[in-house]
Image 1 (cartoon, one colour):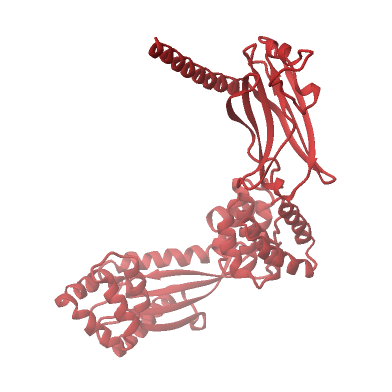
Image 2 (image 1 turned 60 degrees about the horizontal axis):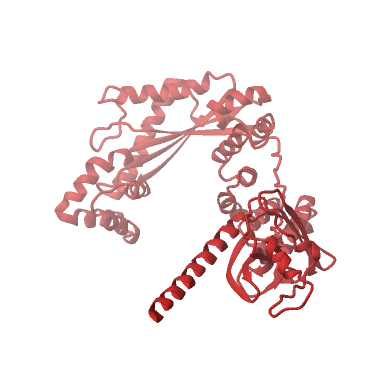
Length: 486
């Protein structure tokens, strides 16, 4: 009998614990909050929300205690706000018995925060409380601690209901980037660079039209030159020729060979186009080791690193040949000789020209096909015809930076476009090269701020402001607002 009684008691205890857990889980899921806001004013933090009980079906003998809590996100501090106590109808009658009884609970909360739940009805309780403001509230969350009580002196279960992950959102600054209007270019002097890879008999410099595929290559040179000379938008001025040789053979001989091959190419152009000699300028450079090194870096050739090391550390050009030949019994050298050296035997030629000025509509078409004959100012005016931030708008600044890669204005404007697109990393990389240019400081400071380097951003903004930059002044104020909410 005693064993049976113990079994019954144990079963009841397990059922009670299970029921309490289920009730807690159900009640926790049945309470929700809406319109939760937290504001700060005059040294006080005010919490407001609606506690919606429409889905709550509370046991008549239960009491659900909801305690709003503000706690630091790192768990270091917290503060409890006045509780809301939701009662089942039987529990309400028990609590309100007109006489004192053992275990009668005392609640220090407002009367409007102690509603009796009317199951299966819509019921919303407005909650607003104010507490003294603390600095740690800036990085704090709001949640409800839930407690279910089902008798006078026993606590059945506890839980949590999240309300706000962060009660104060960080300020979102609105920065204004700087675009620089490029100056008008009075004379648009341009140079178009091309390369011609001719075939020469071994050790010879004569340019023979009918040797191998020289005819096709010379016809291509003719096409390039005629395209410039017949273009009504361009005025042809001069040609610069640079001769190169591949590294095999004697260095001094290759210097002479590159000179003579450049001269033979110049003779062909003078004769073909009836040019004056003063319209041509010639240079020769002998063995093109720089070109070879670049080709090696982009290749997967065996012994690549060993060859590059020889180029970088051996100052004597002829000694380089010997060391490369010694690699794997000449196999590497043979590979270079047949696959890497031929493109190094060339004449680079640059056509000098002057482009006329274009109006905006003309420039909008030319930028698609021959942007190099436009000025930065003409490109900028084209950009202004498109909606700010549009694909076409951003493409203009991308083209300008590609055509004028070393121009500060093209880089400042491209960085401004990148910032507006949200590409902070690209903008910062571009602007760090212009950190000594006052025109770039506003955009540089914005990029630093967007990258989270607030202290350095403030310093750069201050430098720009000292130069009279009004945009930087407004942007610095935006950064200050952000930092106040961090």
